[in-house]
Image (cartoon, rainbow, N blue to C red):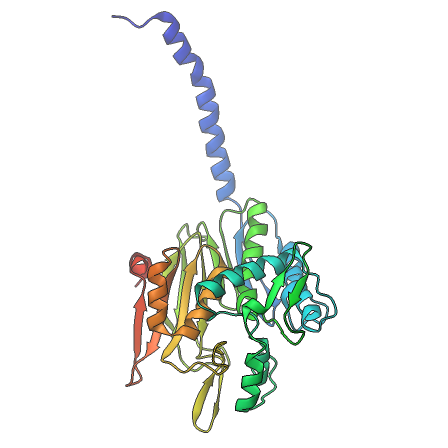
Length: 344
């Protein structure tokens, strides 16, 4: 039975529109492929940032303006920042960035039983890490400072004002600020319709799309050797990632020796003392970098065994953990889902 003539006409009538759509798509793809990859580098949060992205224009000025806003909100070293005003009780009004980080931090604090806690600042300062004071705290000092530590001691009301249970409570968002800065830059690039980028701030990373070779981004996990000068480039593993964020926390770059013992920079908010276990580094992969940053810090407080337990409860997270064996060798554990992302 022959096809009715009106159906044949209707079918052919669509062809010009399909051809236009196909040709337009090809032109867009070619135009996008011809866009250059920009490589921006600078200083922020006391560390180096490296950002690679594909776009017709260089966006460095806008990127640095966005990072400056993060600094104005979260940096305790910037006397004009929101967090500095809150810590000296001169102005308790928060901004949108601060509130976003505050709520995320509270969520991770609750999920980790307080292993991650942005009120740990008094203890960090007493141990001399955050502000390099080099003070050797006494047991009585630690006990008194522990009374000021606890994520339940701060809250934000509907008007955006932060309230403390004690004016001596201080906040420190250093364990999440770099990751959040990566997320802010990622949002900026996405608002500019950038599909391919890699953002790295002090080792915290967000990647999307592909690199300039048309491949997923290759991200290294550093070997946990003593490296206070940040000169070590030896990699323990290479991960092939896209559309993910990665953050690493480790005790091998920030520490000091006293009485023959290595003191780590990670302070346990519950005990008031530096952590004392064999987990050397925790690399966490998550949807956003602030989340990865916070969880990596929490894992460094909790140790490898507890970290694995929590990872089994949070399928949205992946991790690569490196611990020290008694003979000085490394013991590596990673989420099973990372197997296919590991590169030779």
